Image (cartoon, rainbow, N blue to C red; front, side, top):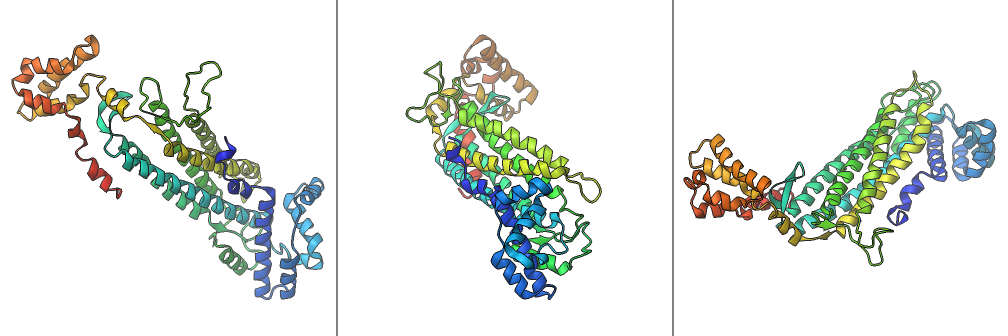
Length: 430
């Protein structure tokens, strides 16, 4: 089930193979720039680009001795390049190439996630239009409030996904940077023009100032953005879980032929996928805390952030990619029961029309405090004694002094509450 909704391209971004290829791309671009500036022989740069390669297994073998992964990588590459390898990594420090490579990968991951979000947005808009005029009860504090439409719920979610898309586009831009400025960011042994040329070639913007590393508030913004997106997903999933409750059952996850809900109870149809989304959102929020902890490093750099990022960046992007695809499928195939919505609207015996009765009485010149008291006392009789609210309103002498039978009937029409739905949808081009 998990593999079914996992994008293999996202997982590929975080493999050792892909990581070192990104690093190699940065190294070769730096050699090309140095050659163009006449700082190393052009033939050497051509030779490096033609011969440079690596083997992950060999890197691991060398690292077992050096205990430094980038040195192990450079040693392995040098084994293939030969004499001209002396020009590779010239004037650079590990974080120059690794941070720049990481930012490239973050941007690629962001593009995959943006595609996921656009697909979810499309499905939400489709289902919003489908149930644009389907009446249901709105709930506040979990208690019946007033009528609305089921389509408005999906439309609300689509608007939130639009904001998630905007957030992620911004977070991508914040991380779409590179840095090749040496051990403490002063370009002590490298020409600043090389940084500009490499970043331009890779589609990045040079940071205006760095220490040994690109500052980690950028990465924290990216991961906290993913946490916000995951929290949106949890919000949607939790609402679906509530709809699927037996005492509500206005909608539910698609239950496929042959699916089983419980090892003990054959009748069960459980919202397991939405529950999974809720659980996975907790992981991303936890990773956001870790990302913020990574912002504070000693002086111009320490390595405390590195081990954290090796976990939270792949885990968070793969998590959000998976849950976005799963949620899109859930919404797309969601089973919806309009008849149950109408039934639930009627369960309180008309209490959901109390505000309209209140305001109609007030429109006759009655003080709001008095009108509220008259309506509430009839509502409480429904809650506490099970009496019919509408019947009691129709025989309340204070209310009938101001409202005719026809006016009371009008107050109990749910269509009144839905008269502006089309206007709301027009704001979204639907």
